[in-house]
Image 1 (cartoon, protein in one colour):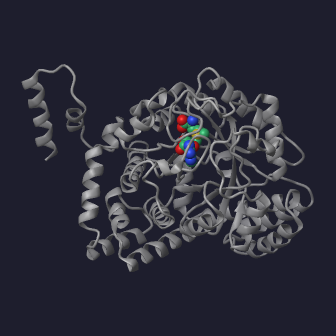
Image 2 (cartoon, rainbow, N blue to C red):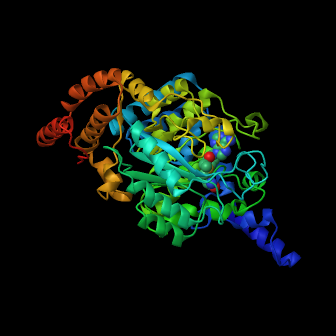
Image 3 (cartoon, rainbow, N blue to C red):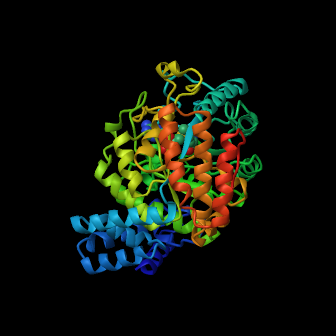
Amino acid sequence: MAIALLSLAVIIKILTDEKDLSDSEERMLTMYNPKSLKAEEFINHEEVLDTLAFAKKNKDNTRLIDTILEKAKLGKGLTHREASVLLACDIPEKIEEMYSLAEQIKKDLYGNRIVLFAPLYLSNYCVNGCVYCPYHQKNKHISRKKLTQEDIVREVTALQDMGHKRLAIEAGEDPVNNPIEYILESIKTIYSIKHKNGAIRRVNVNIAATSVENYRKLKEAEIGTYILFQETYHKESYERLHPTGPKHDYAYHTEAMDRAMEGGIDDVGLGVLFGLELYPYEFAALLMHAEHLEAVYGVGPHTISVPRIKGADDIDPDAFDNGISDEIFAKICALIRISVPYTGMIISTRESQSVRERVLHLGVSQVSGGSRTSVGGYYSPEQEDDKSEQFDVSDTRTLDEVVKWLIEKGYIPSFCTACYREGRTGDRFMSLCKSGQIQNCCHPNALMTLKEYLEDYASPETKEIGSVLIDKEITKVPNEKVKKIAMQNLIDISNGKRDFRF
Ligand code: SAM
């Protein structure tokens, strides 16, 4: 069929002798190829449509669904086609099976650890025209702000005083106001701040798609994960939703992770902004993106984020009619967990406490806490009123409240940043996951970093329940030698020492 379409396009071209192909003809010429470095070949529109048709046709095919669920139980993931069948299936018992499988995989691979982080907004200057984002260039009533290095010291000191060790820096795209040199200088400043026992040990970066050269510079600046949300994988919608500015270029944006890999960044974070396009399309394409990274670089995405569109200055989320319900959102999270078991999943404070609680069971492994989405919002929280924030936060609890809540729900809040500091990135991180050594490594690391948090930042109530949790959980480290060292480290932390890791 694809070959027939291809030759048809070629015949049309010869017959009409056109110099440029129209969009639809060009599409016919692009074939699905996960190993290709061209956006429209690894996120091939026809392949997504075929996948959706296949999923629709098989949504009640219980034999196929059972076979897919059996495969998923092996914990080695699913293809975008298989996962899309599960997403289309609306048989209640099968959905329940998907949920319990996601929970099981989550427990087996991540235990009960949840990593904590905070976003740090550096600048909301932006030259793009993204219609869903309050930073869009035409928004004249948002206050434009950019942190100076002195502001960053104040912000990071405030974040350290909360107990954060891991940040995700965020900035609009503006080559004049936020050039790469500004981002690099800011990263240097962040890593240099040592306030009391505090330190930011991992800086993840969420900035616009850039060049290989700039990705290399970010790698040299020792960033953790490079995060870039695709927003939507649907090319036509993408171009409509990004009408102006450099972000309009679908291929440049979609191929950003390939350039990041070329620049030496092997931990990359994908994401879709749910609500912009139909979710089955986004879901299939997101998994195709993960398959592409695996096929070309031998390592899938380090994380996947699942933001949903929110209200913000000049933005009405109801203007986007592809919003998804909490139920569908939970199903998507569960299916991401099943489909790419070794990829971390991130949920931000865009979501409420109750939604976060639900998806923690289903596979989320990282949450933000105490977040401010305004530029300069940590040092002076009253800035929330001055309309520089990116979106409304649903979960407004403090970090200590989030930590306490996680402990009460049976999770271990973790401030661990060890893997990347030990050079366990990309495929080396994936091998650790696949070797089954996580319980001897991530588990004690989580407990030791929680202990630091309890000693330095926690409220008395959080400290009390956290200490009980640590005493219980440390006994579960399987390797006796590691357990003994970790126990000694916990004592040393009580006595003032810091920063132990396996
Ligand atoms: N400027 C960078 C870029 O071009 O990718 C990324 C930084 S932006 C601060 C981070 C993300 O916020 C965007 O990728 C987008 O998905 C998300 N975002 C924008 N507007 C939003 C809204 N109204 N609700 C929820 N998330 C939004």
